[in-house]
Length: 312
Image 1: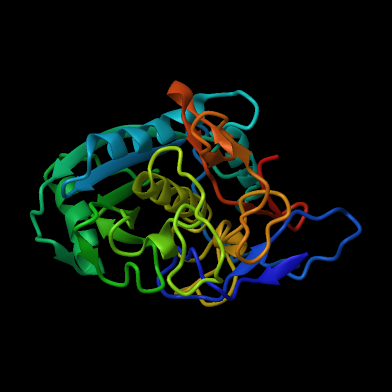
Image 2: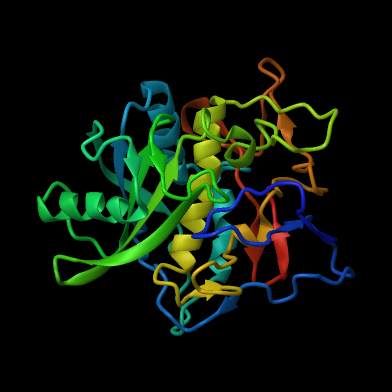
């Protein structure tokens, strides 16, 4: 059963969009989001070697938060059950015109810091400028098989961030030679934890009587990881706004945003679904990573089953 998520959103798109809260279904249940995510014929990221990741840490992100995020990317190499890699396998249903699936893994190639070179209040265009400057100065290579992330600290405001958006991805020409994908995700812990770190923080206008779940890596880091994961799914399958999406290309529902708010079986509005709980810390999660990490990763729309697939 798929339910319209009315109370709050975990949107990762260029504008606030209507989001579907979904729960895993059996084969006899019709899907209210039948063929939600459609292929529009454009390229997707399909390198068999994996998608290359470049990180710009903008502002004063703590080493604890940075380590949590880099461990998330490193976790695409783990092959245990209920791992980050297991979560990503649903994306194999996304294929290009030649039948090549979305890349099966990610590789963190390089990361650099930037201490407020453009100030603490950024427009989205400046996110692109920041990435472009790193490429043109040869700090990062020009990589059409990569995603360049700008990850901002809790004291940095970005246009539209926390105003119906928890991040975004886009593309641009760089070096006059190739179009590259880039993205932004911010630390929501101080600005909008209830919007961009749910279910580890509660929305300002949510129903009474609820309690936030315990975050395994901290509210800020886990909020960022949820949104980074959402961005990865959207960028890999719709890097140039003509791949897999539903609705307006400028405000699309993509592979993960088609299932926003669902993390485990039985999800419904205000309830993320059944999750694992650490016996010691009481932290809730659904995926294992490297170095003993535990993560919460969003459901992904499965094109084969026409369902929001969650880790179980």
